[in-house]
Length: 246
Ligand SMILES: O=C(O)CCC(=O)C(=O)O
Ligand SMILES: [Fe+2]
Image (cartoon, rainbow, N blue to C red; front, side):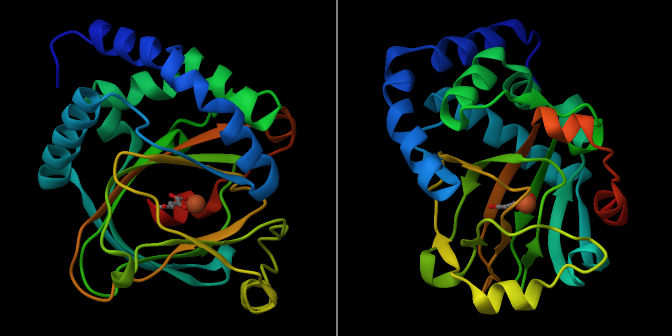
């Protein structure tokens, strides 16, 4: 972790208001409006990407937890991966909290989604990091508790080894009757394989999605930030699926 987080925060803000970053927004907006998905290439400057990756590697080495469970609220689908809880990241990373708290990031997301974008107030869901690395590791079909997920990719296996994002957009989540098999069978299922260094934005509250299983040992590492809509914060949220996971 850096001694002072001020330079990191400044670098992050500066990048997000830079001409280069802003020039990509119209295409991201179009992608999101059509697909509920937009991939932002080179999400952060190289030095920020590299220092964050180092922070994550150290945290995964010392403070991660292995999960192997099925989550009832998303149709008993599997979570088989290694994970870092929000508080461990908040204490051990200078960059990830700075990205989550960035007002320039929320302003850019608002331009893409054409709606107010708010930080999630429930701390455990603000950001988490997940690493798939063993054969059969999978982040099974689910919806997120809040409207948007921004997933920053740090390591990605070859496309033919799994680890892809698969999703069915525009399907509602009823935790008491999730109907996952029905929705996946009806499709269409879109598959994306974002590159390391990119981040993708997904309308994850109304998009059924998963990370496909690894077919052999390989590294897939990401940080998932959650953002809320005004409607999310007006409606009562229960947090049973994240509580089941942690
Ligand atoms: O790792 C990914 O690409 C997706 C992660 C995800 O869906 C989540 O953390 O809720
Ligand atoms: Fe998700």
